[in-house]
Length: 125
Image (tube, rainbow, N blue to C red):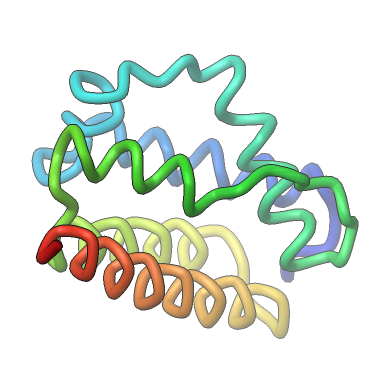
């Protein structure tokens, strides 16, 4: 089954963040460094992924600004982005298959590459 609805996106994102919270490589960033409020964060992530996968236009925030702030508290490295991407792809593959599922993995790779590049540039300033 492919990603077709917001409910599918919610299922994917919930599965992904369940993995993230337990992960030894990046979990601490979400729990200790940022202390994410999951009740606020998850709906934003649903909006973000619904916008980039289903063209919903529901996400209106600046994702880069948030990550720059995190990077100043905890420098983000390729190890962090690689693990984020691994967990995301693992979640997609466990739940979905099809065009949108492949698009989700492609977009996640692009996001990880761009963010990693921008964070590395900031870290060298």
